[in-house]
Length: 171
Image 1 (spheres, one colour):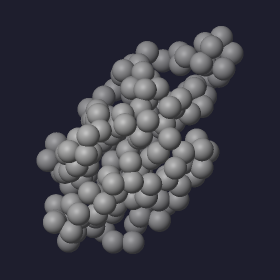
Image 2 (spheres, one colour):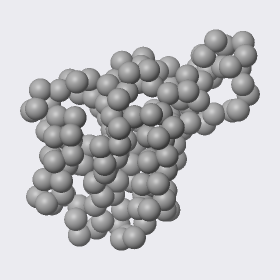
Image 3 (cartoon, one colour):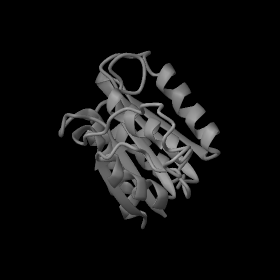
């Protein structure tokens, strides 16, 4: 299965980046083809709601930024994994921009399954992000494989790694 991981942590050795890397390693070990993109290091603007894509653009966004690299990867992916830190009760801005820019094509053409990896220093901050993720899965009509959360004392632990490996088994 072709898996695309959108990793949204700006910290190269941060907790979310670790979770995404553990998912990548487990998925590749299981025989899946994995591409990981650090969207936090990309220049992706938010949607302008200009409707160019639906009027003159024939599904193409008028903005020409690093999102152009993601559109073909999203179109080819069969599974999409969102890996995002939680800074303030929801998915971080770095993952929001690519999600919202999918407006021009409505949903990724071949994605059948999605998973969510989220970390935070605080407990009890995941409900909004998980609800948003669930809603995206429902809107895109894809299988929600589930999520792994990791608060401060769960980050970079063997227990969290095992939860990630279990999530990969749902591919």
